[in-house]
Amino acid sequence: MLRRIALPLAFLLITPFMAQGQSIIHIVDKAADYSQTDVGTTSFNSDIGYSFIAEVIETSGSTLNSGNPATAPSFNNGSSTSLAWNTSRNEWYFESSGHASQGALDSAYANGSYTFNFDGDSAAVSLSGDLYPSVASATMSAGSWSGGEFNVNASEAFSITTSTWTTNYINGQSRIQISVSGNSFNEQTDNNNSGSSHSMNLDSYDLTSGQSYEVTLIFDRFVSTADLGSTGSDNTYASYSSITTFTLNAVPEPSTWAALAGLTVLGFAICRRRLTAS
Image (cartoon, rainbow, N blue to C red; front, top):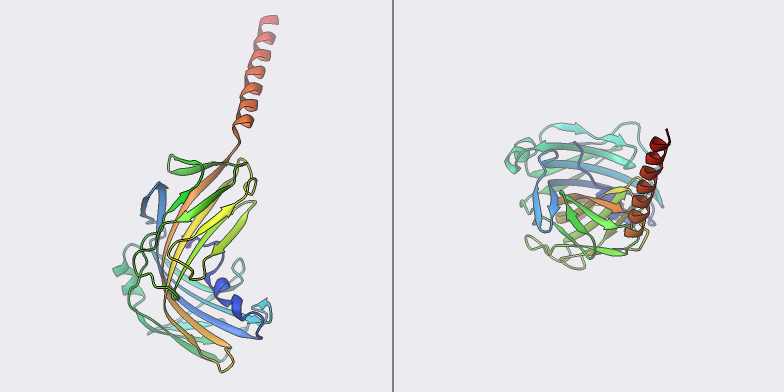
């Protein structure tokens, strides 16, 4: 099962470089996934488990991956592995998820140096330290938990705020993301290293009544970054991540429920009249 992120990590990282001509970003990340089911209640998500992710993204001006090479990029940490083009993410992408423990992930993808080969060039990024962040959880300013999912009035403005990042947080090397994605809504916000917790504000009717959404909280701890080109054309990032997801249901406002209940009662009464008349 793929790690669920509304927007690729690379998209957030390359934004400062998108107006500076061609740039290539190389990323390796180890992540642990969790699910939230109540206030302060999280559990390890064994469906996704621990994951290893490699990403390569190329920009040309403000266009992503405009110069896709015929040959896919690869990375090597003892053996060569190719990345595949991911249309929905608009990048070259590799993921190995479902590892039951950190030890199992490390056995498959050891810490150390990862060398990317891309379009006739190479770049190395170092992943070390096991600096996994603390598990993220969310509190909301309105709504309530029920049956492991969060319900909020679709017509009510509210905020989503992460827990405080307490483990392996360091200003300038840490990033907090919150995303809400669903059939009719997709929004993501990022704190850009401005504090150890973060909030997203949603206006009334941002969500569609009756729709369910997936909320994703991500704590990213960068352990290695490098500018490999004299003009900032090649960049590498290595990170450890903690990812928490939960389901958010946008429920109709009380007056809507009352109207629906009234229609149900009216329909029942009409049926009784028809049965009595026959």
